[in-house]
Length: 99
Image (tube, rainbow, N blue to C red; front, side):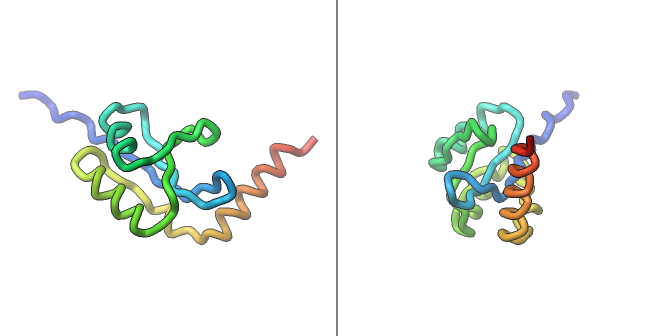
């Protein structure tokens, strides 16, 4: 009896990219998940090394529904406040740019 294939996981975070908040989809390289991202009109970001889509509840539901059966979707970080996320990103950028 064969063991079931490992369940894939997609982590969704709110990221700040191109002066807007986006849904960032982070996952290990996988052709099935990548095909779903392309079908959902997501775009790849070299900066964040993830796929992203516009940040809205409707897009989150569409993406979650499309990934159902392909991978487990973890979006616990989405409950984090936008302002807190933006402050963390700016703070991280300031620390990285510190001389």
